[in-house]
Image 1 (cartoon, rainbow, N blue to C red):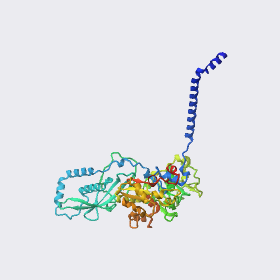
Image 2: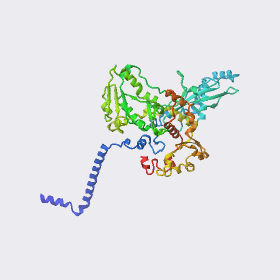
Image 3: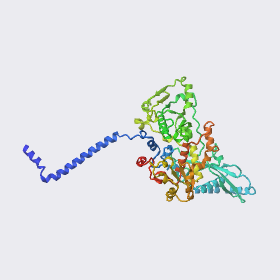
Image 4: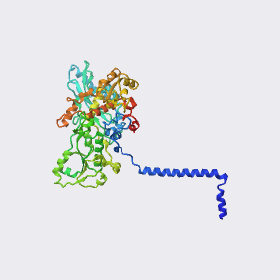
Length: 573
């Protein structure tokens, strides 16, 4: 048996079997390597944690928060993205807009239903050429809608409000909801304009002029019990989707607690202290949304401080500026209606009034490592997170790191840009008839630093720009130039080819006589509000982003890297 076994075993190593054995050995080795590879991949997948951009320098944080592409201007460290920037622009709500044929059809139906009445109106018109225009007349309404659609060819109309009397007997004001045809932002806009209407000798009415943006002030607010005008509703409604409507009257008054009982029943969360103050707007939002996300997770009202310190990076004086208000920069009305928030000053007034009387409990948390999950069972009326003085452990966003990151979600959809600022953007775009191209030209310190940006100064010089833009933008086009170059006359040579426009050309939209200034002064308790550096760059950016073509400094105008020499791959990541 032993001898037979040894003979059969050695027989497998005969020369004629060597090739077959080698193939089998290679196959086994490959299979073994495959199994080991699968095991290694499984272990890595189970233990891998994505790197947190907040452990990187501020430039990395900015790229993470504000950029979804290599777009230079979009990822500028002074610009912050908000909820509406993350919304898809192809919502069903945008698909159904009013065509000229829709208005013609309703006009024909109205005429067929009231031929007798129409004849009587014509007869009564004779000898009354100077009688007031009846803005409530359906025929006048239909005529005004047709005139608006025919004149403003670069926008889509979604709703027309019923006309009202204008400034005299021959004018009517009408409002409408619209969106630019090539619009990328997920938002609607509202305009209201004054129509000059004339009556010919044969009593025919016609629109002889349409005023500028927001001239039809009598149609701005829809009166109570006023019937809707004309709207072409989409076949399918997107439920639960709220979109900004720029141009509507803003009501950002502070929420008020109705009674002692309602205050005492509620549960609250407040963040106190910390090192987030006077940081960049990106840093501020990253931390604020952590607090708001925790409040929603705990089903508590967030007690928020509406007073903001504006970082020196946005200041013309190059110093931090206290005394700013959240409502200067963001849409508090949308936040208030979408989440449970309360102003800090109002909260402490009510707390001091009723805390002892109603025996309201307070739970103090001084370690950011105490997770929201551990606080879920707390019954006290108020949870107060108190942050120390040592950075970066006193940043609010530290609460949302680690295991909390996958549990508490930052509610970006609750933060929209100030609709007052966006109304300035809409006004500028409307003055350009929503038919313009835009170019961002970054110069300033970067153009002067040839060590890090060796070509930028030359590539953004007027002569080079004319050559570069020749193949990108047609001659004669309106060209909006968003730039940090303080002397805009530097770009005068471009006027020979384009109709150039700059932000300061529209100063009347925020000067002391403007509607914006009036509303902001009222909001700020009668004190005037500066159109500060952050507001400027925010408006400049948004106007740029609404251009039909958008030419950016880096990638389009120069081969230099945005963050300096040899950093292109880093900036792109």
